Image 1 (cartoon, one colour):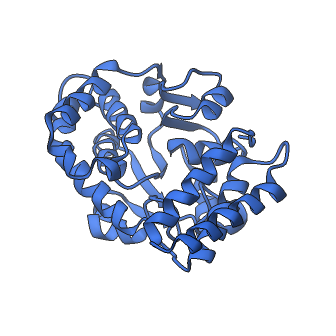
Image 2: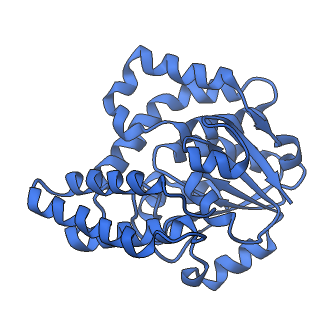
Amino acid sequence: MKIHPRCAPCLLSRVQFEAELSTNNIALQKQAVLAGIEVLRKYLVDGAPATHLSTKIHREAYRILGDSDPYREKKQQSNEAAKKFLPLARAFVSEDDSFRRAVLASIVGNSFDFGVLGFDADKEIAKETMLGQLKRGLDVDDTERMKSILDDVVYLADNCGEIIFDTLLFEEIRKLGGKITLVVRGAPILNDVTMKEVMGLELDKMVERVLTTGSNAIGLCLKEAPRELVEALGNASLIISKGMANYETMSEYNFKPIAYLLKAKCESVAEAMGLSRNMNVARVEE
């Protein structure tokens, strides 16, 4: 996906947010935002991939802040909050058509900011919101096609919190005879899953192997990816790409078949996919 001018204020707001997570020093927060503006001035170029810009701006913010993982506490909070919803999601998936339901639960997990919910996950209104999302269903549904090509799945993970819901889909893939290579970020960036969270949540026991992207690039930067990952992507019977950042990256490459599982929260992503904002999407491209 290519960069759009509307990406600029969104990126700056994320820089400000992570600066506030990292430090109470207003001068340092300002310095991070100003550095972000300078990155935008240099790299907000027509036709450039969106994740090239987002990777540069966040790496520069981390450098200015002297903080390699501003979201460390938010990630932990996200996972703990999501665990409170897991029994509800598991009950939903256990009904008829469990694979489709697991895909939907995984996508609904992508729509929640569990780090914001935190302990509010206990509140009834949060549960009602989750149930409402599940009842809405899939706006784009290629799950039957997915089921036929699950032999060797490469699963590109996205955020903490939603990874808890992904485990329900892991279970369904393996029930259908599929093998899973889970791929997480090679180093902390935003609230994305890294090997640290994999080991802490024992996700390695739920899949056949775990690889990393090799760096803290937003999504996947092939130039920074380990050879083993590139080979896995090329040999996969199906790549499952979770979330918008992975879509922004993988849509620039030619790896197929690929299933994009996401909530189209961003107008630019929805537009690029030819969809409407806030759709629940399980699209296979071959």
